[in-house]
Image 1 (cartoon, helix red, strand yellow):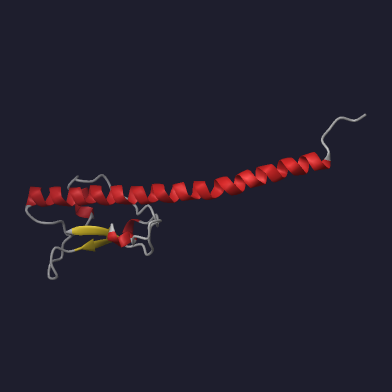
Image 2: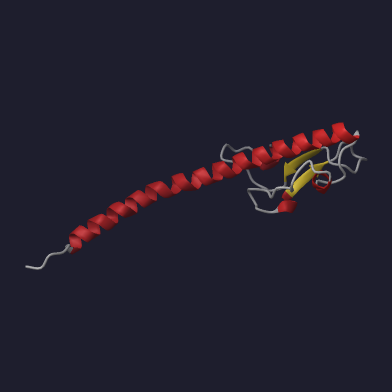
Length: 121
């Protein structure tokens, strides 16, 4: 008699593995999205702190985000974790007439898993 698995046994194992993968994939995809959103909030917080430190040191806001890198307040302008692009940051001036960076927000359209718009962070 030959030893081995029957077609039914192999089919049952494949069905069980498929069910486990179908359950695990949405959980993994959701955790990646949560991690990117947490990174977005952290990057915005760090850049805002650096803008405030720049203002305290020089008495004015930086003209652009690269000024924070040139003056060594940041090592590099981080890429937007949602889009992966560096120019995805939207800068807010201190007043309508000003040409400086008072605040920074994400320029990526859409909202997080709680329904909050990315540019509201």
